[in-house]
Length: 340
Image (tube, rainbow, N blue to C red; front, side, top):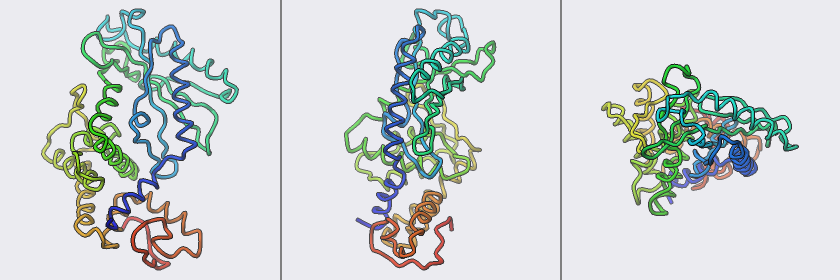
């Protein structure tokens, strides 16, 4: 295995979520769903986001993925709700769910300090019980089954209830099914590539893309036999070309156009430069400095944090001791692990 490829394997270990926090996230999401399903307004619930597809990460301190899911309302009891009904907005029923879930959650002794409030898409649950210093939260979308076709109506609670813009199409369950489709080897590569792409995206003070956007690109650009490094490079390269050419990326389930979170010109530049740095390492995968330059550019916070953690031990002087595999090289004490 070349130095570059071994370093990518080590990076995957570095961004793993703490096992206790991951277990707590799963348990809290399950609890939130079960409580919401007991409300007369609820019909069934679901998990979405990184947990069911296995792309949860902790790219650096303070960046912890929370649990995502949703509660699907009983349409029979709400014939007026949503675009398929009389256009009734979701604000009232969401308030009712907030008022129900909060007290039910606080009935559990360990969550006596829990708080539940309304967020843009539904409920935000704060459990008031930190795990390893972090109070892991859960986002629960308040969704409505569409009368025709697949997918759900998703609320936008920031919109004026009278504006007619309080609902939008979404299909979180369909996205999970789509992302987890295909041969085992392809699903594994896709999942691992998304974890690294999410870590790369999280290095910036303002991430350029939603996790969903990155996952859609991975679903589109990662192909069978591509390999982990090649998959990450393919997404960075092909996405930058797409933005450069002004070609829209559509959500594969609901055909809505996905937009970067930053100006498109900045998003394209960020993708292109990352692809160029990684390509240089791919072309010379056993050159330590070239690989290190690429890693420092793509994952500066992760690399800095790893270096600080290990540098506390005065005897650590080699790349092997820093946790990176491959030929062990001596590192001068003055070496900087920050972005070059």
